[in-house]
Image (tube, rainbow, N blue to C red; front, side, top):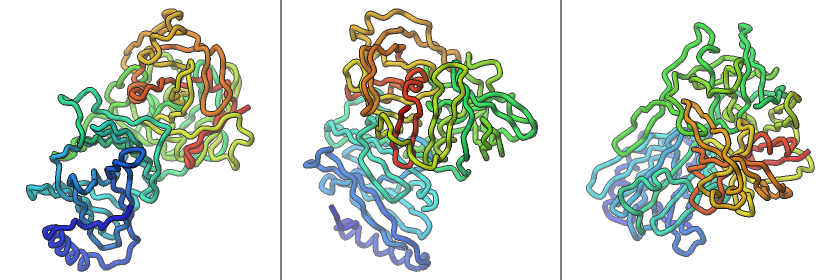
Length: 479
């Protein structure tokens, strides 16, 4: 649905005129039109909301009214890599002002009292590297999610959950007209993707040998469930810089720098000791350039010679990766970057989503719809005790050793046998051994009746070759 991008009021027209005059003087260089993605209420649509796409010519300004009769909720624009969330209420009336500055978009919100809130200016070169997942929660019960890709494309996401970091934390209940818009943004690194096949060995975890240019050696755990790579301080060579690690929190009052805290299986990890970049590192025989890693103590029990965790952040540099999971401990495997062709004749295919840096696949568990987090860093598969604790197959299980995460946090577990389990459109497995626990990554997947679960190394080994096509957001697997 197209609409005039200018508010139909004398004030808006006069504001636009003054901005256009200034723009035409300051920005005469030709540039491409910009696509603007407007989150809009849609009472008659299946989702209750939609995303309208408007084009803003170079050097021009658009003004969008945020009022009950306009239907516009917000402009969807990444603030930068990471997670952000906004609570929008009926009283938040005003106008979204968007300026096309030739090489960037400048956005501000003019409130009804005349005050102006500036948002971060975003360069088109940066937007072209970013993918953003948007979750929308409405006080009227609306739940919907979208993908915005590289400032050019918008599509619904029906695989992943609608995430709401404010759930259960607000001092009031959401009502009609209240909206929570949460975003998760990832930026394509400038560093090139590794090339070739990385040698992998299966023990309790998947391991790759690591060699620094100066000859220093160790092993990394290959962890598809880790959103970012991690290294122990002792493996950082002398003279290599360790910068302070922090995260930016954006609010109406402005940005605030916080300690960098990574999510772990049993809860947030301790604050990072810093961040470092290895100019080059050889992992499993493959050269990885500009490996950016968080410096922090590693979780216990990985092995005495383990010096780091290779996360999915490095794998996402490629268009596609294929992991041949060894069927047994001690057997070799490979991780191939950008294989020339997709996996032929796969036994299973599924679209996947991203939630908090995790690849999430659809499926079922014990006859219920489920979402599986792909996690090669977990030796076993897990089910969420908060979702399946009352199921007969769980109640007949037994207590097991607790799970110990970073910071020595422990979580109680059970062992049980799920009668059935399935991932995507693949054949159903029967009598699947599972650990049952309330893990921190499950928190974001609850809320719509689907069972949060974790697809660990034990089940990945059943699947044989496991391929993640990041460009198409499609997983394929088969032996």
